Image (cartoon, rainbow, N blue to C red; front, side, top):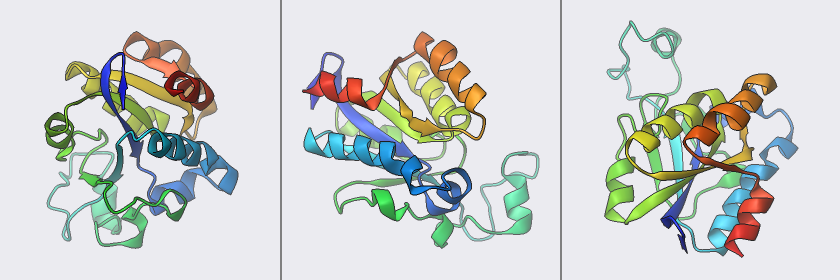
Length: 189
């Protein structure tokens, strides 16, 4: 699907069982992600699922990394575990790639950029958990890599609603278009 910015792709980020269970206690919290996925598929926009996961023994985790070093001590989040699998409510189709990353940004340590460039994608539609984590980090890196970006405000979750609001209203608009799913859908129609 082309828009005025070029070929687009939807990134559904960190919608994996171990993260969804911490942020989305009610099923309704996942409806916006399901709607974004349904819209992308309807308009033949490629969908990429991004998850965070680690190899057995955690060779990717440096003890100085405050975010991930606790995982290497307590265990969990290896790529084979249930916690790193994409949540059943937004299950990927066979032709939709699942990208594994090793840091907060969807780009860091993954093959995402290689696949995007190979497919001629230059416009990213971002959604995910958490707004202050994967969405913020991916937006910043994508902007530095000269992608055009849309953030689906209502398809982002954060444990702090105030932080979500500040990011989507004041920070993200400096580098991205921020839309709700209804406006994005109208734009595609």
